[in-house]
Image (cartoon, rainbow, N blue to C red; front, side, top):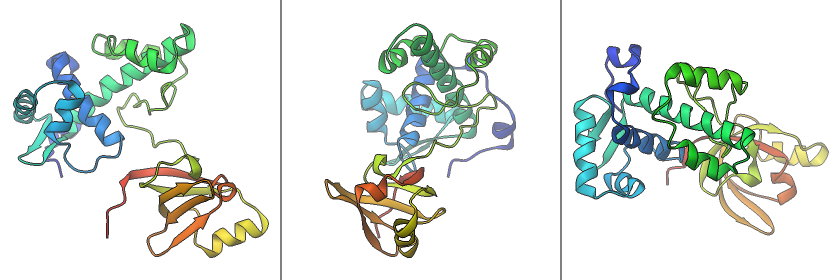
Length: 239
């Protein structure tokens, strides 16, 4: 677990204390966590995402560790400290707010809007970001579907998706079942009910094979479409 001091948790760091390059390292780690990485993010992965050499990435990670923004674990990688997470969320909040504006008001498609917003994320003050959020109606997600951290820099839980839209291997929690009649009774008999965690282990034209920890069950595509889930972590650990 990252080491966090009381000061890190209670004091909100200022973006002005970090360079654009340093911020990119922080949001790279944050985005890896969003994508499902559990534990430290490897230096090689960080270097690849930023298109820098592994020695350069290692040097920057150690620097950010010394400043209390990352926690470096030799031979494993880096995690965000509380202060680093707050800074990363500030940048991601600004980026996704601008992407929402560019997509909704200037006609950029989602990918173009996100790319354009990358050049604005480091140059927008907190006050400007707050005003932009208010103007946009405080959206919960950007045009690519990624969550927008709130003003308090907390990240809202991901929106539910249909089970058949969940990637294979990703751990998720059932939040709702809309099936009725015998279909609902079948799901209940297989313990596919709200609150249960599951992963999809295989997907094909005939449906999904779902791992419920204590059993595996095959669900038709029609049944899978009646189950709403929310991602709760990365991939289920192997037994």
